[in-house]
Image 1 (tube, rainbow, N blue to C red):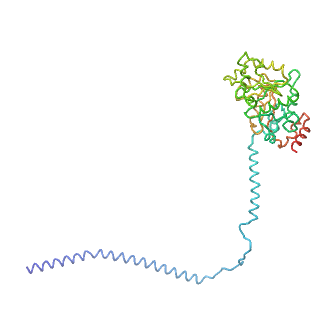
Image 2 (spheres, rainbow, N blue to C red):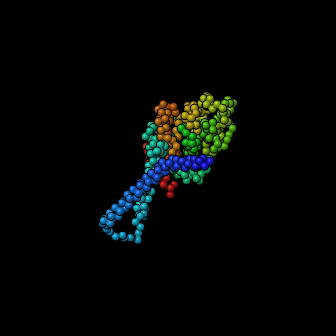
Image 3 (tube, one colour):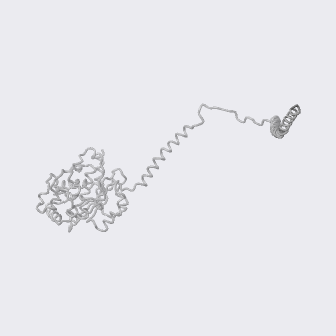
Length: 376
């Protein structure tokens, strides 16, 4: 038993010694790593310490080369922003921007505004222009004619000149008796000119009758009230006589458009329309026909066979100048009988308007005189 105890004690001491021997490499590696980190940090510390000393020496040895050239000064006015410069820049921008905008509008504007725009592009005879008198529009009834018998306003004088210029297109073998109105677009003022021209002719003691050939819309008829018996009833019913559709007026007579028909183009092709016009020629001096725009529907071309003079109305500020070659083509191809132009809604303040009516007819002085009186 004593020997076994000694042997077990020796074995335990042997195991402890072996375990200590086995742990030596691990501790050695840990020791080497710690020493390596210590050397690195020591070298870094020495390098930084050396650089700090060098910087201290260089700063101590360097001379201060800074010197004051101009001393700081101050004024009672701010250096920036410059008030005068800002005002001048604002004035220049205020002049430049509107000028650029007006130039852009001028270059981009392709509308017809004056007689010169028409004369440069077309060779159609020019009858005259109807100015836009805003003062009359504000204080005038829209359903009543604008022309006055003794009026000296620019609109009344313009229709007198238009009435006179029409005489130059009349010949002995072919007098101007039936006058039709047409245009390219809706709202050109055909009905307005037709009504006022009829009134102007009536003031000269002429027998005048108006015919509403716009049998689709009846614009002229609406100005004088709706009437169920008119041109469509006459063309569709052979029992209706001419006197049944004529509405008597104080200044001129009227034939309304009548009942809206489902086949207006076919009605206008009927020979009864020619018979009606032949009968009216013997009873009236002038027959004013308010027609529809040409090119949109065929009615204007169909009904144009009755005309002695076709007045093509151009509305200033609405017709594109690119459509003027189409007007010239209509004139050259003679699709409209005895075609002439009238500019409606011209601006009196535009350059060149004052002598527009006097061109070739000797009415310039009288027109300008009346216009000045009206302005005063």
